[in-house]
Structure formats: C-alpha cells, structure tokens
Amino acid sequence: MKLIAITGSIGCGKTTIAKIVREQGYTVFDVDAWVRRMYFQKSFIAQIAKTFPDVMEEGVVNKRLLRNKVFDDEKELKKLEKLTHPFLRKYLKYVIKKNSKYNDCFFIDVALLYELGLEKFCDFVVVADVDYKIQKKRVMKRDGVKAEDFDKINDIQMSNEIKKQKADIVIDTDKSLNLLKLDVITMIDYVEGF
Image 1 (cartoon, rainbow, N blue to C red):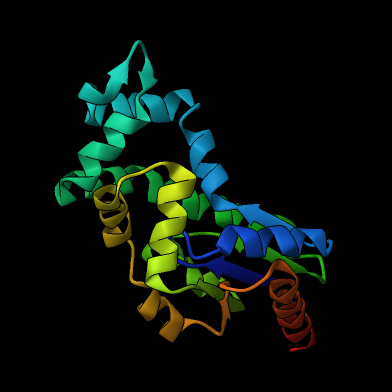
Image 2: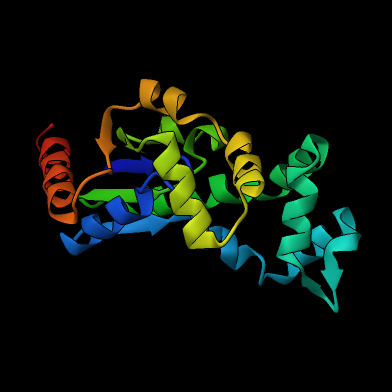
C-alpha cells in the first residue's frame, strides 16, 4: 500500500484535488470528515463539555463559539488539539493497518498533516498551492467569513510556504479544471510508478 497525503492551507484547493483523485477511482480518506464525526460521539462531547463548558448549548457543541474561543487564544487552541489530535492519529493508524494488505494507492485529504505529525506515515505528500490573495478570496466567498476571520484561521495553520518546502509534489490550483485534472493525473501516475 502506498499512502499519499493531500494537504495545503485553507482555500488552496486540496479538496478539489481530492475530488479529482476520487473521480480517477482511488480511495480518499477525508480527515476533516473524521473531525466532524467526532462532534457526534458522546465521549468527545463530554470531553468538550468538561474542557469548554461555555460552548455547550443543550448538550450540543456550538462550533462557532468553540472556533471563536480557540482562534482568539492559543492556550485554548492547544487544549482543543489535545482532545482531537490523539483521536486522528489513532484512526489513521487503524486505516493504514486495515488497508496495508492491498497493493494500491490510498490518499488522505488532511489540512493539518504536518501539525498532526501524520506525514511520517505517508509515502508521498502533495501540497495544493495558490496565491495568497486568491486563497483569501476563495475562503471569504465559500465560507462567508470576513477578512479578519480568514486571517485567524490561516494564522493558526502552518504557512503554505513551509508546507511546500516539505512536500514531495506541489500542485498549483489556480488554473482551469481541465488543466488541474491533467496535473492530478500526472501526480497519480508518478506516485504509482515510484
């Protein structure tokens, strides 16, 4: 099994690359979806309630309140990471073990690859890249956030420049979908043949 990570800062196009990979018939594990599922697990909700009681509303985590709390305070962000990161590492190890017998390429779509230390499990790392101004415009339009909210989100992630330096492959996503597909198919051919 070859494990290939697709990463990149918010709005850089990693999800679009992952979608193209899926269209080519490959399995892509969406780590962000794993995180979203965590918020429906009773044990995780209980941990959030204990650590951040002021973000709870009738037994449910108000993610907007939680996001605002952790983006404004690095100590609070570290508390949240202590709850989420071990789960993500454990789940990725499970996925690797479950699929290790297959002689195929598996991809993971993960924004915080380096922040979680997951790159050590991967055979290749692909970083989605785009100019900062385009990145910001994409996120503000897609998520309906203000410029200062984008900056908060972007600032807690490792810079895309650093991610690009650590990557095996960098794909610029500022192009037509057809050209981007060609780049993704070229990337797949490369990692399969390596």
